[in-house]
Image (cartoon, rainbow, N blue to C red; front, top):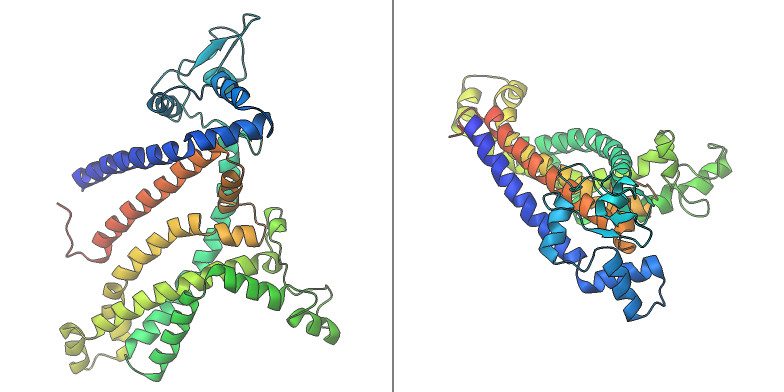
Length: 363
């Protein structure tokens, strides 16, 4: 197991380097850098002024050199100003202009993520705050989605072809086929609108005091989560992911229920609930466990639409803002976080195989 973990960690590091270099290259192409210069210095500056701004800020160096600076394995660029003070990557990040006061290297390895041009703050602070917000959303989505998906999948798979199976399978397919931007808009129209949907009807009956039943804007959830300001984004994300997990669970449960040891247990007179809970369920959860683990990176990166739709400033919303405003440092940091989440969840998924199925051995 230790050799397996060491090998996987090595592969993860190589994969992370390759993926981050691709993102670094795409965010540092000349057109992107020109847009960044015009965003920071003025949209009407000339081409010569764009080139001068890029040179003053260290963007005219070779791509590999700047990638090494960003990683922290190469020295950060420096330049001495007319008054004798210093500027450069490490000087700007540490906020000093005294010669020799800044470190030579200041990149990802040293914990320097850069500064966000969109939020005018250190990238590490922005990412940390937004990850916490999305983490809370992901937690509640998993609390709602996983039990419901497993229940639907197990109930459908226990008796293949029954009316219960057909009904639950239809529901699972419909939820998976409905994208978040559709279900989110429907939820807002039905439950969070003061002019259409259920809210005006409930107000006329005197059942609710406010103008709407649920809040369509989830920004207030940052100050305090309530059922009324957090239910709609949770329902929107959970409904889409639940159908896929339920379908995988149903297929796995159906396959397990046809195995020889299940038939033997039934012939020996073991009760059907005992067969499901003690014999079939653990083996049937191997495939859903993998899918659930793969849902975590999807939740982190796939909630962009939901967070923008409900104005919830989490990781997805921040990623959208960084892309819309060409915030290179923030985009790079977000890509690192996304890559790490995907690789770590895949590693946990592989380890979970061994725990759920003792017949699987790591060599």
